[in-house]
Amino acid sequence: MGAKSSSFVDREAPLSSGILIPLWLGSLLAMIHTAFESFMKRLKEDYDLITFPLRGKDIIQQAYLKSKGEAFQLLTPESRITLVSSPNHIRDIATAPNEYLSLHAAAKDILKPEYTMAGFNWHDQRGIEGVGFVRTLRTLLTNHLPKMTPGVRRIIERDFADDVGDHRSVNALTLSKRIVTNISGYAFFGQDMMENQAFMEAAYYYNEDVLYGAEILRLSPRFLVPFVGALMPMWLTRQRVFFHGLVDLIESRLNSHTSEKYNDVIQWIIETAPKDQKWSPGRMAFEVMAIWFGSVQGLATTLTFAIYNLCEHSEYIKPLRDEIQGPEGSKFMIKGEGLPLMDSFLKECSRWTPVESVTARRCALQDFSFADGTKVRKGDWVAAALGPMLRDSSLYPCPDKFDGFRFADPSHIERIAVTQPEGPSKFTDINDKWQVWGTGKITCPGRFFVSYVMKQVFFYMLENYDVSMEDAGAKHTLTWRTLTLPRPGVKVTLHRRS
Image (tube, rainbow, N blue to C red; front, side):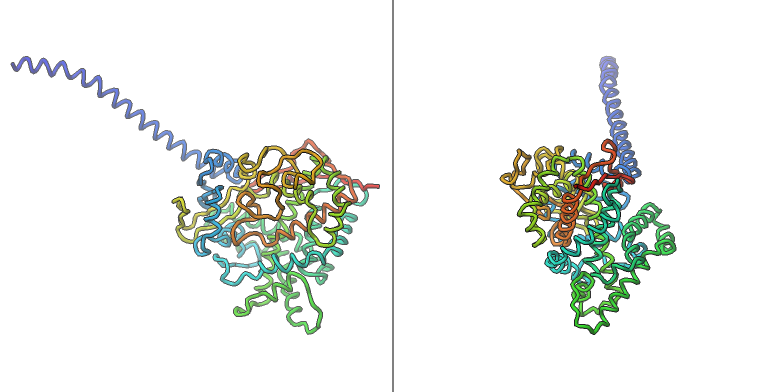
């Protein structure tokens, strides 16, 4: 009996080994595969993190396509960011309390204003020191636009005469920035500072200085930022010229006893500053500097891209000229608004070449949860994936086709155009699809000024010049982090019409 049992065990041992060994090998291979996948994932994350400044736009686009409308997270040099695109997620950002999600904290982390804006160190949370600038830009400046038209036309005419003359190839960004700086100076300071060349030169370079300074700090190791930042004033000398010029102007306005009524941004900032906090002239100057940065840099770049697109799609020149020479052109010169075909063209330019790939940036001041359960940790960011949304076929039919009249009323168009299912819309509109201006209560209050200035420049250019790219085959843009920027040295040729 014992012999039989031993024989039975001996026969079963090879059978058990024959089953267990493959199972063990399979388990080992699965573990190796899982470890390898985890390693490759970490390697890709590290690679994406290191190369984000050069590939940020592409990284976001690839992740967006994989997400299929769901929220997705990326690790960026600043922090982990949760990017969203669905209407529900965007509304969650729009309605989140300021003490949870903060635009100011995100902007502060990017721009490092305490080092790059002459020492301006704003609060992380919006509204602590008032939001008078919103009324200044959204209401007072917007209502004042029609009265600015004669002065704006003189500025544009002078700048084109100085930089272009009758025929010249010019750097499109330089021309746009000069015009935008001078028009913004007229809107912000009236005539008071327009003839002060040192001040206006500092205003012209202010935005570049902030961006370059902030980029140096963002590329520096965190422990070195305070030391590098402390050295910034040594070469950001124009910041002080701009700041002290603003302080002098504000003090002059505060001490003025004349009955003259000023209608410009700096006066409205003085009048809407929180009375209970008794802002000093320096604090008011900082507010103006922050608004100036937001209004000039993006506007000049957006205008440059619109000029590029007009050159590349010259078939739009005739219908746009016909519009400005008709009743709509006269209406625009009186009211400062209108020109639906030009409005659609400029909106399509912003869809086709958005300056930013993300919008509605917020930093989580506390742990935050979206309605669907997506969680964001304190210190992480959230944003809308603007760039990919603008090329999403579910939002924009034929998204890879430039159609300057896709947002116009079809009855105003003499040809077949790609149109939006929701119908005509304006450049300055805000909705779930069109996140160019931000979302919720913190949308761009200066968007009507942006539209007005771009239309004024296009009006004058179409009226007086034929325009084309100097090198039509060259690449005209470059990307850095989440930005699309004009490539240095890109020129357009302007020839005065007879």
